Each structure stands twice: as C-alpha cells, then as structure tokens.
Image (cartoon, rainbow, N blue to C red; front, top):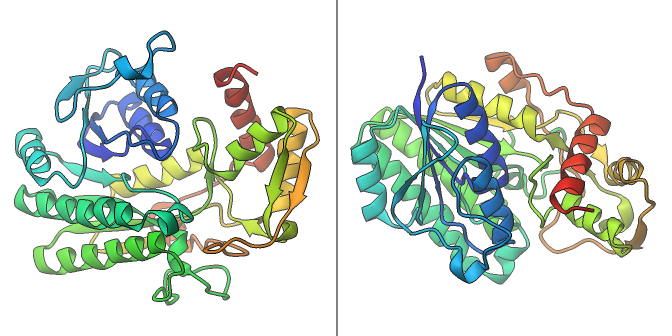
Length: 343
C-alpha cells in the first residue's frame, strides 16, 4: 500500500535521494525546503529539477530563477509529487499544509546543517532545528500524524571516547551548537511520544557520501581541489577516521524505518565500519586519476578524531545491511561529479 509522505529537506542531499526513491516505488511525496544559501543554491535547484520541480536552468540568471514561496508546485516528472518552498519556522503555513494534505507519515530531514557554521551563526540553528522541529511535532499532534521519522546526527556523541558509538552511550556533552540542537530534537520527540502516543524514530546519521552530495563536505571539497590542482586540507594530520556511508545504504535504512513505525526509538545509521581519512583520499585519488596535493593541518574546533556507528539496532529490528564498498561508492560519486561539473 502506498503512503502519502511529507519529506522535508528535499532540495538537500539525503532528502532528494529519499524523495526520488519513494516516488519511484509509487508513494505520494510532498517535498519541502526553504532553499537557503548555506551552500550553492544552484545545486539545490538542480536536485529539485531532477524531481520535476522546474526551478533550475543554466540559461536563467539566479535573480530571475526563484520559486514562489508558500505555494505547492506540481512536479512535471512525477504525478504524485508536489513541492513547497517554505520555512519550518512558519507555523501558519505548516499547519495549513498538514490540514489540507493529511499525511500518513512525515520524515523530517530539513535542518540548518554544518557543525562548524554553527559556531559562526548560532541563531540559524535554533530557528530551524529547534523552533522548526517544534512546529513539525505540533502539526503531527494536531493533525493526527502518528508516524514521524527525523534526522539526528552522530555529532550528539561529542567527545565520547568509547567506540563504536552506541545509542545507549551518554550524549549529554555536545561540543557544537549543531549537536546540541540535534540532541534537543531527540528529547522533544520523546516527550511527544510519551504524551501523545506518537511513533517517533530518530536516526543518527554518520558521514554520508555519494552523487549529489553537499559541497561543504569532504568528498566534494576534495574532488574540487584535486581536479583544480589545489591542495586539500587534511585535518589532524590525516589521523582521523569516519564511518563513511554510501547514500543508497542510508536511504534503504530510512525507508525501512518509515515503513515500520514503532514507539519512540533512536538508531544509529551508518556503515558500521570506520575508514581512515587517508584511505578515503587514496580511493578518491584513484577514481579521479590524479594525486592530491595535501596540506596537513591541526584539528579544527568542534571536530572529532573518529566516528564509528554501532548499527546493530537497525540490523536487528529492520534487517538493515549497508554493503556498498568504498571503491564502488566513490566510483559512482566521481562519475556524477564529472558529469555535473563537466570536468
């Protein structure tokens, strides 16, 4: 049976891939995004264009290429897809949308992203990640949507030295405001599950990569620098590791959660295998056919040396199996990167 699902953040990396997968299997998807300029809006427009939301053209200047806000737009590619450009903080628009559309499920992936940017612009994180999430919870409560899944983050583990990170670990010592807002989402969701019987599932995402990825993340930063013969910044002198997870594996896990809602739960979603930063760089160099110039640097504020997801909960409860090999995932990313940026 198909579902009617609100997916927030569909101009974003994970949200775009999730919306496309749901649409391809026959679900009805209402996409939502405010298309902010945290990173290149042309990439966000291009993702939406792939979903049939025709807001992007390389022949139209940015000044004359803006979607009308607070209005549902029909996709030209998918009959069962509409999109609305709005802010989660706009409670009036959110309530109207929930009242009229009568969703079966909501997957909230919209957020002000970025650990380091939260140090520079803290107010944006409170508005989008806390006030916005509050509006999602209230709309679900008021319009009887019981099935809510939402993006949390591996950053909630802070300086936790015990690895792999387990959902039973303490997460009350965040080292960035971004992480603090994500932890607050988990607490808020727990409250609404307890008070109103909502089924809420938080997913702590680890490092996601793949086609259509964010330009502020390492894979895109590295690929851009390498192809343009600039040095890449290698923090902590390369002595770092990340639970790099391919986008298709992430989307598999998110859909399993949407299809099987349960009472309040938190899961890690990642690859279950940490990879060294240097291994990641070497694999990318091989796929691009170019050796990177490396500028080895000290650790950045708000960063951690290693992330490693214990995803046994998702494996046990949903038969989750992240199985994309790094070389294969990087190969797909590089193929897209060369096409999109016409290298």
